[in-house]
Image (tube, rainbow, N blue to C red; front, side):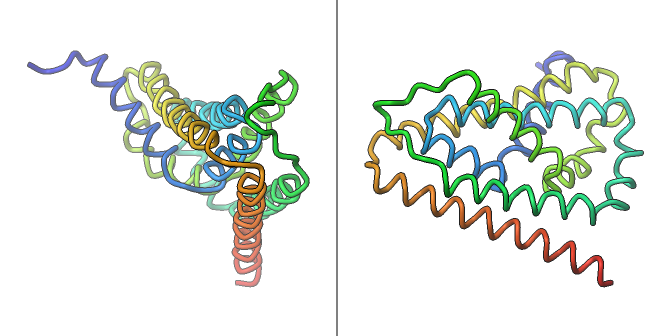
Length: 209
């Protein structure tokens, strides 16, 4: 027995959301780092910021604007790559200066969570990997008759991934002491710094060609 069209559309959207969110990249590293250092709420706020970006991109794609956006992205890849590189370096420096909150003191204030959410949106908008993945999914999203359901599915799939990731890391975090948490903070900073340097190197390469 086949699924109703509306359910099939929602499931397709969830699949796209999971596909875009799951690859480990700058946003995944940031979500893991914030969960380890500040708790599940900070990690989830970061993930929901990424899911919001995915929601916006999928809405643009369903509206048919993605076909216009893709050439613009390719034309402005140098600017986007440069912005992404500097954003990653900024996050790397902030992380190195960020104190680790032990599980016993894990109580996130609203302002900190809002900042985590907003900064994730800023990074997601300029993250070339997110844009490339959504451009690859355009054939699934463009002009879909049930655009609202598909877009909702994308958000749900992305949010599901970030919820699972932050929850899993939060459980693992309870087994870590302050030394391991501080070490993970430094590792995340180095990884983001490396990704930022790579993004800037690619941007310089495009500028020289």
